[in-house]
Image (cartoon, rainbow, N blue to C red; front, side, top):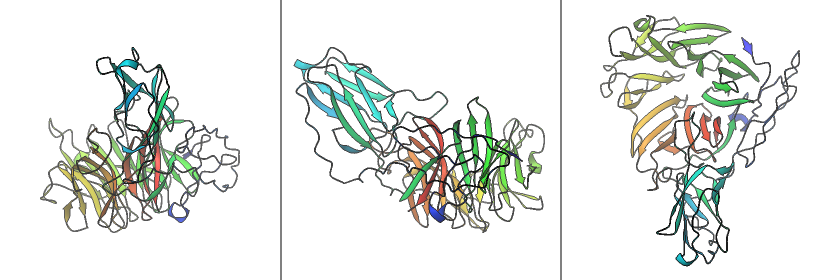
Length: 462
């Protein structure tokens, strides 16, 4: 077991008893994880002394900014327009604005400038100036700002941060400059999950991802260092342990399942030892096995692709018992689901959630049931708690109000289902969330992408 000798970050006992074992030690002190402050200050970890000191009490991390007023709250009166400006959109003080807005200023013809560029039309938010593209229409005397290119490493769109305040400033005209503010959504429906949130970053990392949280608050995930190397990790018992490949989830004894390359092989990490997880149907070199979830009984769920069988991929899910025996999922197990059915998580009651070619499902130990989210065309379940809370991603959601389209309707987002109620997950400042797991205290973890890159997020219910 290899522990990182330097670069350990400190995450406090974030939400009291809801989030346990949430600090890192051995740094000669503690440092707070990154959080949503307007001007985040990088932390400089201290190398581990030898021997390492006893764990120090962890500070409370700075929470994300308080969300803006809910939908329906009267907006303050907008500031008056200068004589040269005919109109501005969004109007000053607007709330529930799309995360991918069109910001426009129209001038009166007699006072319009000859041109407007990114030099004199800017939008700033929680992390400073937002990269954007500006166009000028001389026929309508209108300047238009749109969010510009995102980091090349990322594949998602350049949305603004959710639940965040932005200021647009335009200059270069008589009577200027003029500034106006707006607040992004979402504002529901569906209901926003009442929660407190914080970010989790490994110090000196370029990216940090969280894929799992167990009932003791231990985290599993992956990070990328400054040289572009990927590292898996288990954050448990106040220590960060480096693991191979991509750790996914752990049980309450901190047994971890994940995958490693080059052909994608599942593994179990337990008591400092690795065991390959390979379904008998996919045990030829070049076949692929994913290990996604594990419960306290040591039952592991995942999927396999038997690439050697034919020219097309034969894919199925599996359940692996602690004695090493495997049972495969297939389309006959769930007649309402397509082939390619596989589980992604299993709880201590033996209940499971998973995905298939045409949706997601919930398994109560005896029967399968489709897992729809009202108004959404595509659902991807990712995590399951002992209380049968479910987290994941929803897409094509025409009934979800506000996000990254001009029509003020989201194409999707992350959700948690608690009991019979669906909630949309939010972290102020994040452009996008991907929820991967939830524990029995209702704490949700996953990946936040903001203007600076990718971070782990931790959301605890209020």
